[in-house]
Image 1 (cartoon, rainbow, N blue to C red):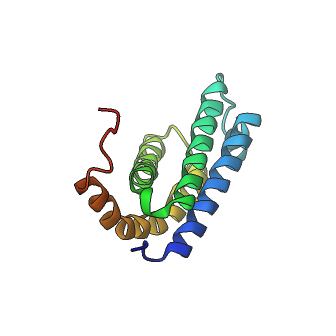
Image 2: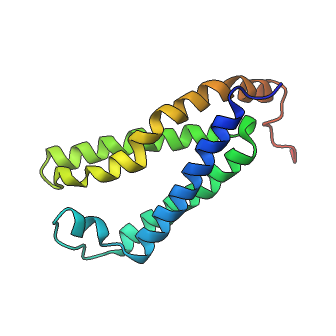
Length: 144
């Protein structure tokens, strides 16, 4: 039995993968872009934003794997959605404490909020497959 809305999920995770790889690559090449965009003082250590770009780019590779095997990407998508929820919470703290201006919300909108619904729908559709695989021992370490 295939995953429900397979074509939709494949499209979403191809888009998420390409987006993350592109965003991560750009952040590595131009780590000061957000600070210029928001009118903030440039970072003293742009390597931190470059590293964030690298991590998000690697998530892109994982999202492409979900697109290839949509019935088996539950954990990757769950971790991805958790980050897409925790990231805005961190951003909200930065804005409410006056450390970052609200204009940095472009990060939250493009990296997080737009993905909440499609990731949540995917998790709902892929849950039965993940549960079945777990119950049948397919998630166990086969080397053990």
